[in-house]
Structure formats: structure tokens, C-alpha cells
Length: 466
Ligand SMILES: *Cc1c(COP(=O)(O)O)cnc(C)c1O
Image (cartoon, rainbow, N blue to C red; front, side):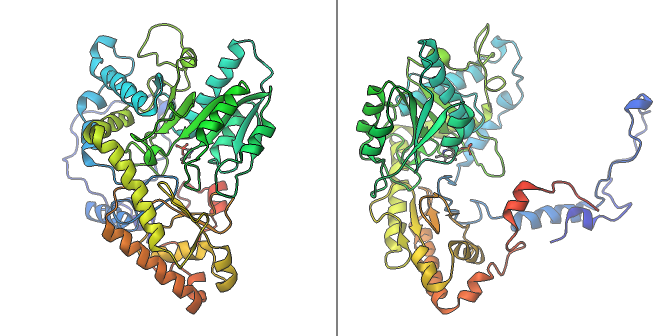
């Protein structure tokens, strides 16, 4: 497909309006352009076709199955968008006088109460703009808590190896030494390993639960008890609350602090960079350190972002929670778990699960022996799926599983779609033994086949260079 700049023809445009007969305002010389901007010149028809073609070439939740593990790419009901698009929400300014923004304040307060109830926390902030940002704010709460008590000797944060990669990064960003502990063979935290590293220097533990191999830690109460006993606090990475919302609560599991990715579990379309919301909830003993929006309160406040964060994402989350209701929230979680287990069971006898047990909202396949036998890698499988109209699952993550493919079907997929996905994956499993070469060269029907992903990430070319 050609770039819009390549389709440009000098002088072509879609001017329908008559020439302006009002004198223009002359800007001072030093503020005026010296060269006209280099904009593509196209007719409206060609412009419209260009974007339609782009749209057709992008795979989104609305075009097909998107089982990206750990990211909860579920269908987001349209009503959320409709509510967030109400002019009363989009037209306000964060510095508008408080008495003119009562509705927005009510949204924040109602959402705070709803999400506190769902997480079992006492207070919450919506300032952080994404999950990793929420972790950062949350771990700073833990740091503030220890420091406010005059306890400066706690310099370490424990992170199990099944945690999301942002967890150790966050702990390091907050100035802590990261202590990694291994998983037991069943995918849960190794309790003996945990006991060995706990001590007077433990500031806290960061836990992703269900963890990145899709397993709910069966010793969760024991884990939080042990950390508290050592004087540390417990941080819950709730980016993927999709598996447990309305069923169990981090607060009841003994956690002091949690972040939620409203842009995953609570139904804001994401990908391509946002907008997101990494809401942070905490128990009462951490609440005094919570960043506060200048919009909500008068006076001095710690802030991690301007105003109330990405407010419209909160509007969508509130709409989602209120439309699903008390029955709908746990039902969505249970269906997410059911769908993952259904798909995992349907793949029996093909790709090997990394942990052969009941999973939560996602499961991980281990393709290392399959690769040895066929020469076909997890990457090859992922790339071939593109030709079948399925978005590849997460690959090579979590790092503790080699040749990993991580699938999260989500609750919004029908049994027909899951059956289709299982059939496609089974087909590819067989194909790897018959024609591995075909899979090494896949995808065969995509605009871009195998870009150098590292180079694309490190040296992105974001501007048209003629
Ligand atoms: C996605 C995710 C994060 C990071 O969230 P971002 O919004 O991408 O910063 C953290 N932890 C887990 C478990 C996640 O799935």
C-alpha cells in the first residue's frame, strides 16, 4: 500500500468552499512560515479511500479474534464511547470553577467508590495515565509509608519471576533493589524462596495475580501474611483484574495497594499508545500519601499527573461497571476464565501447555519441543496466524517459558469463534510437520511480513522522508 504522500499530486485538492472574501490577519514576520507546509494533496475521494484501505489492513478487535495474552483485548461496548462523548464531559476544562463541574466530580467519586468496592480498598486515585505509571505511584506510596514512620532501612522490593516486566522496572525506578524469586514447578510463588529473602530490609512485594502464566497463586494469603510479618507491604498488580473482578478482591487477599488498568479490564479500547488509566487503590494506612487532583480539593497535593488523569477513560469504566452491574461483573470474569479453559482444552494433543492445569483468564503454550521436532518457532506460528485472520497471541512472554505463546481469548468471544481459533491452531500444528518452510516465510498475505522489530522500536521513522 502506498503512503498518502506518495499518492499526492501537486495542486490537487478538495476545495468546495468559495474563496474567502474577508481580509486575512497578517502575523508578524517573525511568526510567519517561510515555507509552505509539505502536506499531501489529494481529492476527497482518494483521501477517503486511503483511510478506508488503511482501516482494512489493520487488525482490530472489531475485525477479528485478538487473543493477546496479558492485555485483555476485549470488545468494548459502544455505549461507553457514547457516554464519554457527551459534550458535558468533553467540553469542560480542568480549571473551570468547581461549581460548574459537579457532574464530572460525581463521575470520579462514583467510580472511586465502585472500584474501591471491587478491589476491597479504602481509597483510590485516577491520576496515573497507564498501568506502569500506576505501579510507580503505588510503590511510591509504600516508600512514603515507611519513611513517614522513620523507617529508612527497607531498600528492597521482592518480585517473583512470573511478574509482569513492568514490576521490577517500577521497583528499580522508585529507587529500590529488586529481589527476584523463582516460581515453584506449579507456577506459583516458591514459599521457601520467599521466606529466605524476607527480612528487615524488605519494603514490599509486588505480585501479579493471576500471574503472567495465567495462574492464581494458591498460597496468596500465606504470601501476604509472610510479607506483613516481615514489616513489608504488599502491592497487587491488578492490570488484568479481568479474571477475578467481582469474585475475589485484592483487599481481602491482604494487599495494601493495587493498580488497575481501566484500559484493559474496564473497557477502554487500547493499543497504539492510549489513552489509558492506571487507577491506584490503597488501604486506609496508605491513603494520606495518595496523589490528589487539584480539581477535587483545594491546597497543596502530591501529583503524578495533571488534574484528574485521563478523565474520559474513567467515564467509560464507570459506564461499563454500571451497565454490567453486580451480576454482570463477576459473570464477565467467570466467562473470561471459562473461555480460556475451553480453548486450552480444545488444543489438547497439539501444542503443549506450559502448565497443564486449570488456568485463569489466559494460558501459555510451550513450543520448545515442537520447535525441536519441526524447526517451526513460536514466531513462525504467530506469523502464519496473520494469514488466517487471527491476531497473533503474545509471543516469547513470559520469559520463564521458552518459545511461549500466551493466549487470552477474553469473555466477549463466542463459542463459534473459539472453535474456529482452535481449528486454525490445530491446522498450523499439523502444517508445521508437513511444510515448515511455508511457515518460516509467513505471513504471505500481509502488507508487512517480518519487520526488524528491535530497529523499529529503537529507531522509529515517524516522519515522511521524501
Ligand atoms: C499491561 C500490564 C501492565 C502495564 O500496563 P501499561 O498500561 O501498559 O503501562 C502491568 N502489569 C500487567 C500484569 C499488565 O498486563
